[in-house]
Image (tube, rainbow, N blue to C red; front, side, top):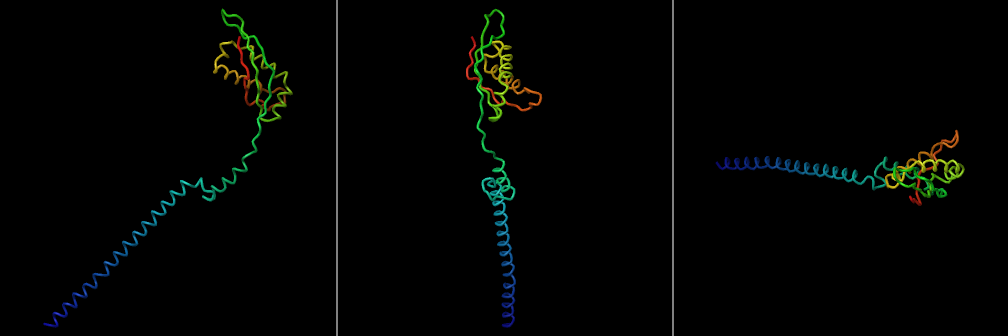
Length: 185
């Protein structure tokens, strides 16, 4: 019997030895899974960080680097605005019913793209003044006394002044119109 009891103890010890390795395997699997989860989370976090900050970092990617290199090439030196100041205009406005005749005195400054545009305006000054007089004298006081009316007048002036002065003249000379005085009496 003593040998039977010893053999049972040996069997019990052998069973304990066989059960321990599966526990180690499950612990190893758990560690591997946790490490994989951490790697995936780190990858996702890195991807989110990359996409959120790629515009602020110069080496954020090949495309971003190319875009930043291309921007300085596209930038041109700022062109100083060029202005042409016209002599003041005094015109009779179109009459309205039951009102005395009204006059408009206006001083205008034209903005051109560059100095060459101003030269084009000065070159054609008699035609510019004629077009301006025709536009201004065709208006009623009620049409040009509001801000909306003045904006509409600016659009009309720009459209008329950018029409060709000569057959081969296709260039637009005026890019903005500014009223420096505007008096209706």
